[in-house]
Length: 385
Image (spheres, rainbow, N blue to C red):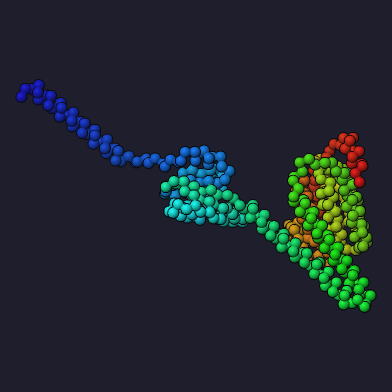
């Protein structure tokens, strides 16, 4: 074999060996390099739909990993580290994946200590053989409103039962005492008192229902504060006179606020009536107004029994009574202050109270002020009855 042939053979053998080394190195590198698996693709259009949904939506794959979550779902805390953070929802997703049946349930999500739980409804359906879609709606506000409605109906039923039952018993007593004119008159007076209490309760329920149905004040009108205070005093003069209580109009005059005239009149009237109910005979109640830069404070100050410090935060709740026994004697309904609070909220204002037991209370209703008045509005205010 010639030297040339040998050189060619050695060169070819070197090339083969070199190629083998390179191939072995490539195979080894591929085996040691971590494999990247492609994520399952979402069905066409699903991602676009989820991005505009106002509901909380999740798409979960076969390994219970969240492939896609809408912004509300993340904000609600349904996803944590690409996993479903709510155990009940995760179990529901697994059940749907197993049998392909659409399921719907209500889930109570516990939150931080001291924070009310969140009530949600979840509807879970299969998207494909491996993907599952979960739609979650927050029903917390609806459940709270429903609870308030149930409590309101129960309280109304209880409050109506008291005067109605009393009138029935008194009517039976009148029949039995038909031959005793003095007893008939006594029972008749009590029936009149209970009927007035019933009428007042029904009227306040109607007022509260109407206030709750009113929309926020889009176009408030100018309201003369002096007229509102004078009306509240006039409407309560009879009750005040029965207890020899003097009603005094004090504070700044010629103030004008922005709001609903009837609602403000009802609120101030309720504050005056509440003060009369809890004031001793021969005392005085002061109704005053004070103007700020952008607000007007309407205050009612009495010399009554006052409110315990632990009860002040609850006095604006519907039907709440600081002293139920005293309310029965005064004929109170427990709705007056709730109406005041609702009027303040609908006007973007506030109501607050200062009170000391045995010294009296001051309720202050703060409402938006109208700082400038045109000549036309001035004439309209002066003509308001």
